[in-house]
Image (cartoon, rainbow, N blue to C red):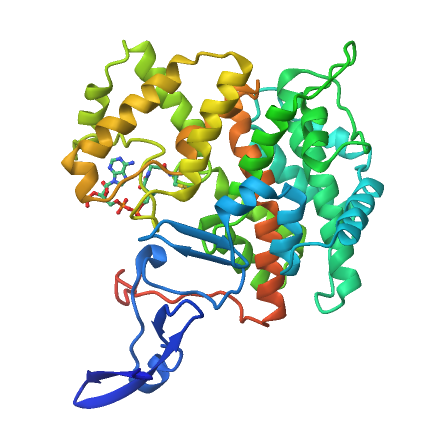
Amino acid sequence: MEDHVKLQYNGKTIELPLVEGSQQEKAIDIQKLRASTGLITLDPGFKNTGSCKSGITYLDGEQGILRYRGYNIEDLAANASFLEVAYLLIFGELPTPAQLTKLQEDINRESLVDEDIKIILKSFPKTAHPMGVLSSLTSALISFNPSTVDVESEEDMYNAIVLLLAKFPILCAWAHRKIKGLPLNYANTSLTYTDNFGHMLFKLPHQEYHSQPEVIDALNKLLILHADHEQNCSTSTVRVVGSSHAGLFASISAGISALWGPLHGGANQAVIEMLEAIRADGGDTSKYMAKAKDKNDPFRLMGFGHRVYKNFDPRAKIIKKTADEVLSHLGIHDPVLDIAKGLEKQALEDPYFVERKLYPNVDFYSGIIYRALGIPTEMFTVLFALGRLPGWIAQWREMRLNKEPIGRPRQIYVGATERHM
Ligand code: ACO
């Protein structure tokens, strides 16, 4: 294989090294480009730019492959718990039973947040979006917990990870209980991580709470499927913020804000709102297909298309099957599931979507499951954030351990040249 590419510019030939990953992905290393030519590259949205070398998640958008640390997502979703996957992403290996037990026990010990956090929560209006609440409370955690972590100290890093894994689900559950006007509750440490999250969301003070294994299994799968997705918008945000040596919690809080947008994690909420709107409008999916294709109409088919997947999103396949299973177990017939399936069928046969390789993404069916579990629409992206937490932590840690430089892109200035008053 060639180990470099040649670039001709201004009568000179410059050699730029080629870099190859473990799955034979190739890249041109342009780190010396500006120094040797005065040129920079221009790539809005970073569609062709690799920002780092990473050993965490591999995805092949053409083949529809997604792997965490080498394990296929289908395998992990079928056979692992969310906490095992979190351990795998962050530390690189699946935990032994002893390591898993220790992690769970350490999390249990830290499953409290400072009571003063409740004062901050109280000051939000009930109408506040839970993603805004979650981002703010995660920032607030910094003031109540040590904000600097020596990433090279295994103990320091482990403790910070335990703190976040323990406290973050409490904040997610509290954001939900706030909008519902429910009393805030705490963990039941006799339950597994995912089961306990269900308990914190749904346990009512005047009733027993008994989880259903099928529901916990579905939640577990959803969290695993969202746990990492290499250098997406929120993860890149976490890495860039962390590259200034901002603390772990501050970087995660920034990631939550990035995830909130409807083109990213906010799409799961937008999908249900879209499906509901179609239903309220008489269920005519063709009308909305036409709107999605009309370049003069800003409407897009939410839950369709992906920056990287130009084939089926492997997560969407698992989620669609899980949606069928969980709805049938709960005996729910949700008309929006029928609308979603109808839209998918039409889109997969429509030349506009076929030519642009637009397939359902992870968000297309996830909201239907959340709805069936009784989770309100505004909370969908919070669930995504809980799932993505281990990925953000793993990527932040890798970036710091690799001693990556501060993230600071350049630009091509197109504004006014020098002017005088
Ligand atoms: N509906 C209609 N047309 C679409 C859609 C859509 N959902 N997605 C892309 N297109 C069209 C674009 O209009 C564009 O058409 P053109 O070539 O004629 O101009 C073409 O497909 C390429 O689209 P881009 O926006 O350039 O693709 P990009 O990679 O920048 O965007 C994105 C990807 C943001 C996900 C986009 O497909 C989209 O907006 N989808 C809907 C929102 C969504 O579901 N987001 C969740 C993504 S998954 C996640 O973040 C967890």
